[in-house]
Length: 91
Image 1 (cartoon, rainbow, N blue to C red):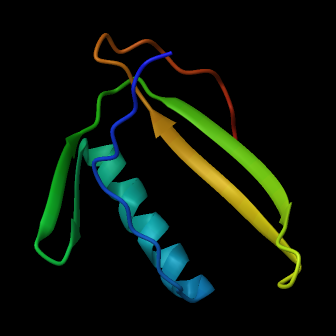
Image 2: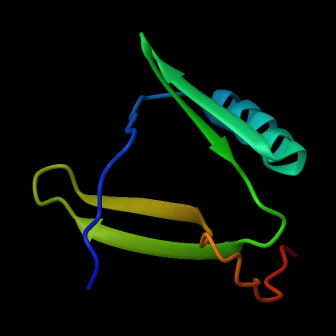
């Protein structure tokens, strides 16, 4: 298994409206092919290829004192050699 290097991380509490706005902006940037992530003085620019892998995962995790934490994870992946995606669609 290959080594993983974290290039950027951000975690913030936001309203549902704020998250929705961010996701719409992210979708526009994916469509345009360039994403620039920034936090403070930290900045990361990504060139997004035409062919992507989209991974969707839903999890429940028992946090004992806080209760069950639900998560919806949307992960966009690609390889330098640009292997193609599957046909997952939203309904």
